[in-house]
Length: 141
Image (cartoon, rainbow, N blue to C red; front, side, top):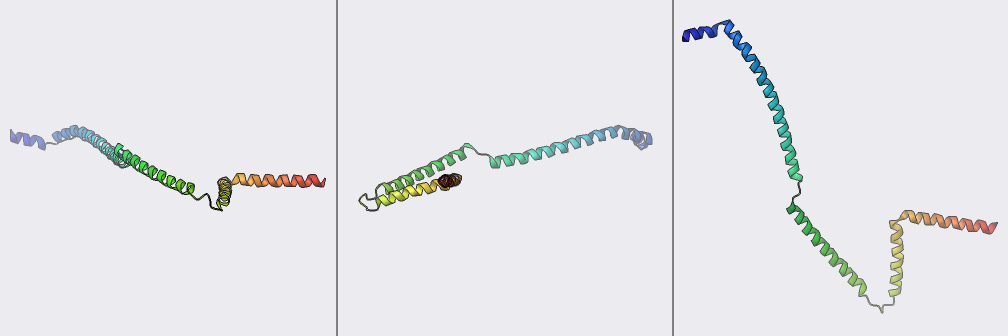
């Protein structure tokens, strides 16, 4: 029987039969391989996205640490502001230059205001110029 089976596998008809049967299976396996390769590529892409997500993720522990740091900075800022107010409020009122210092502070406030709003300064200067021209023209006529 073994010899008979060996002879059967040697025949061309039997080989052609097997090749025709297995060619369909080979084609299906090729489709499966291509599908698996696409799936593996997508999985790799998703794993890379997961790594990026985990690197940039903010969790509750991080938020609590940031909140504690913000509170610490705010406390330090409040202490600094309090210290600064204490310095200004405790200056000697019998100083002969207190009035001059107050006037300088008011002038500085005006300068700071116009430094923050330069367009307003420009419009004010232009407006004064136009009013001055109007006064000159009305006196000439």
